[in-house]
Image (cartoon, rainbow, N blue to C red; front, side):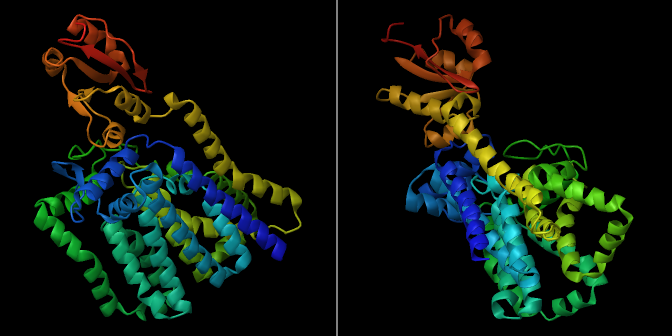
Length: 483
């Protein structure tokens, strides 16, 4: 038993360390990561802990501040690095794992708890989000804490669980907003109606003092934020939480574009987020539905309030977002904790001596951690595969002379803003023609397809100094520098 436990801890530890190491060398890429990292950098730089800022002149009303608080604090303590800004997400994920393990061991035993953690740690979305600059790991931590606290309070009615539920709710309100209330209240409603034991424990919670604690911890920031930048509450509560949900092509987004998808696409995203275990669960479910005996046994599980609790918790998030055509796969993260607990319960029915099943389970456990790590090594060796401006900005900075600036044509990527520490500028083609004649040399980054067009407008050849995946760096020589 001790040897099996040792192997289990080693496997979990290696997975967590793999993600910890890879997030230190991977550049910030895509849109969300560098955008949120820049918000956190500005918070740390300006010392404004009330209003997150999208640019030095534009407040960021899209998300509450909890993730930015932790990331800005990490910048203060560890410096402005990829590792520092990603570390809070990793810690939030580890916190979720601790809660999952505590709940599973108390309700289903150590073997299920171990399996649940390995399944959770090796899900695609969990492994990737654990080392990414996102708000979702904090929402997942808050929802997991709230749902675990409710369940544990029924079994062990101690203050740490009874009031921990309300602290978790406050954390969720500061991590993502009122969505936290929906993701917790939603699965609880059918459980309270159909399961008297859950209803009885629910009514014993300290609702008056607990809700007062939740409001005391969360509401002051909302009031301070609205007072500092009026209009925040209307945009955040009405725009981000209502209009974004009902309007797939919502045009009111101040910070990007709507994630327009076909309604119901969240179920496909659920399979991707839970990969590879989502496919395993689908196959196991289909086999049980087809077999009359197993189908009957599956139907009887509805009488088990503990499994019903997990099932309602797991299904509510995708069911809720089925109604929205404006989704991302990261929306599934709060549902993966109960899914992995259910998956562990299903796997626990496999006889321990079945060597084929054990080997298959081990292969599935390592599929995502090793696959994602291999990809990260590949893009480190071949940086043109990654959507980031880190290498271009670094090269341009090394080539700059006193008084020179890197500018992007028309639009600056978020990663360029972050890696230039806000020093890179943006310029239109008309401005470029005028500015290039007034300075000795201008370092210009522009989309690769625009190089020839800009060369024709300026009537001079433009050399390729450096390339990223989407941009090419060139120099424009003006007065007194060889023009």
